[in-house]
Image 1 (cartoon, rainbow, N blue to C red):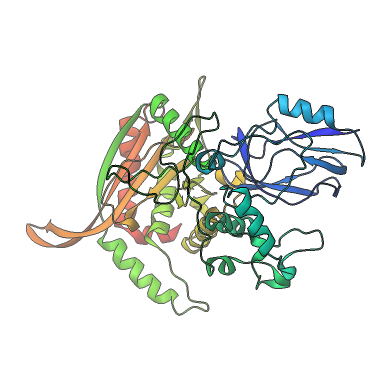
Image 2: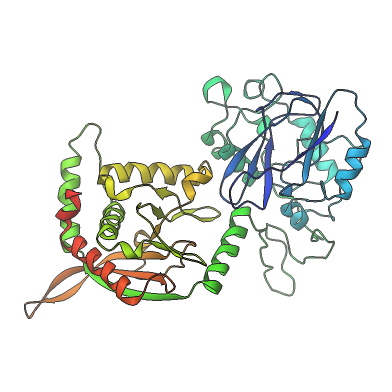
Length: 458
């Protein structure tokens, strides 16, 4: 008996997801745990696997569609079944009206859902911008699939990250020759190709049909000498960032404590340590950020009251030290977690942060790797920022904002000498962390960073 396949909850905070790419086509036989599609959630691109077996009778939400949690995305059943009632129910329930925002903002006419009996396809324009029918037909006619990069079922051999690159450049992966194992398309295959020309957007509208002036992603002709703005649809990640940080600033009473650390000893120790590590096979090195993460973890063990969470009925003091590390990605910011950071060496922290950051930028982190941190560190020193105040990452009770190491004159024993300083600001949830608690933690942190050989002892 045919049934609707609904958008599942693929991350703890997921409320909607965007179909990144279907891995099956209508008419394919599906088994339990088969990969159906890749879905971009608020945190990462996740695999959407089947809970049922049968034949994929219809795809209701195409590549690029944004679908609410629990809304239908496909129909699975037995070959030849009448699915008209299910299609009608899906349409009335909003199954396929969850149209991708990029289509609504950059197409040349208002998007409209296909008729119930229209066959669904998974060959939509990769970037969410659909060219006019004539242009699309011409492209399809001239774009012969590259056989080595397509498997026996017709699916393109490419990772979610490569598919994302192709969408950004509006490229059809079926026309790209893969140089990876077995003809798989890898990132450099896409990066080496020029972006497809963007069709002009003359009369863009929102999903509700409201006109949006100058909504194209390109640079249309000036109107009255004024350069039109660029309108970029919100990604799933950016929506989540906006919601969570607004909630944090509205509901969490922030206050801030700032210290200046003598970074000279840390600078010298890191230089000597990296000189020694360069002789290893393979050579290794540690960053200032690795020292900061380790020092924060050790300072928390000495001032554990800062490692806490507020709830409506109690304060939760964590016995684990799991440090959330802010990582900048194309769509915004994610915070993968270094578990038990107080028990790990500098080299272990360096390797783990590098791995987490690489997979964060490729959107391959799991929800578990981005949740349940107890304290956050955000370092903008590598971007030339001297000092800043960060927004607390709920439900954590504090976040440390780290500025860059700056050279400046300092007074030592009554004499002005060259020195190095580093500014740090602790944002505290006043429901959890009082001023004295935050000050105690910062004092321990300063002591460790100004005597950094102590960090190596843990």
